[in-house]
Image (cartoon, rainbow, N blue to C red; front, side, top):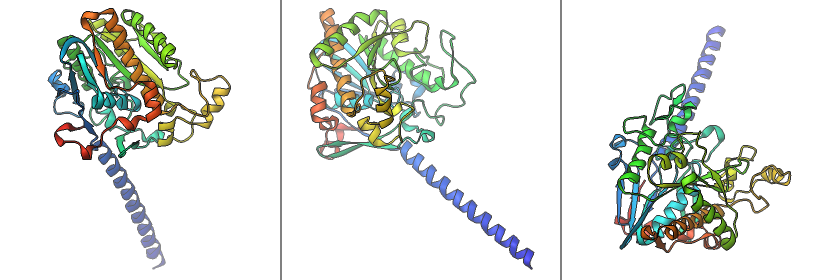
Length: 393
């Protein structure tokens, strides 16, 4: 009798543990499912003339989570063309915020602007729970707040799996990390029938080739402890424009930015392969993002937005960081403001050198404006926007 009671209690304990574990798994699964399927409203501003899917240029991604929206802003006068890529790495959200600022506000007077705000759409629906990333973050606006998914550096294994033991880059056959097969800044120039992320970069290359794109700007963020940060990365063909851009913004707008050369021996990168496989002039922008540094406190939304961390401040005082860092941190406003100004200045410098391919836009704020007003000031309220001007991604 006593033995039976002990066995009964043991089964009750086991059943309780199983129910508890099932509840935790169900809750986590629900959170990941809702995050993956959360739709961000993208508002088309006065300059947007059409929106298409990337699969129109790369049919191999049609019907997958890799397919994403491509926004065209065409001017009344013919001129040059620029392609802006954001969320190549979806854990560097200043890129997405910058792209949406252009989409909602830019008016193209001459030339054409093409924007892919969620380039690695799968990575934007992926998470990094091992590092305690938040699932969402919100940008305050004058009408409330705008909510975004927080993504990951690599595409979700739900969309591209399995990973190889070693990623053999196409076409150079350089051996890269197995994870790089899901990193859209390692899979350039891509191929039509390669792994899914190669099909994504192939689509962007097709846009550049078929639309005769002059400039491509890939927007990123990098750690304060990483030497390639707060800079423009450019290959030889783009170097003169990159140098003139950094000198101009430093003298006129009073923020630092330097130039890093694109390494010819490291393949798969946008700033290398675009220039080698298209006539387009490529640039990659990096702004400091303290959130990505390893020796920080918890990975909170506050850290993501204001960039303030006591551990990084201590390291800065010891000269261990590659950017100036003080009690003010490195806010989202600074990052987005820099991206806006550098992008506008690259267009200006290119247009001066190539007047027959001028790209001229208006109604986009520069660094000082974003610092003063905040990022959210430039976003429109979807509840007061005509539904035909809202696209969900």
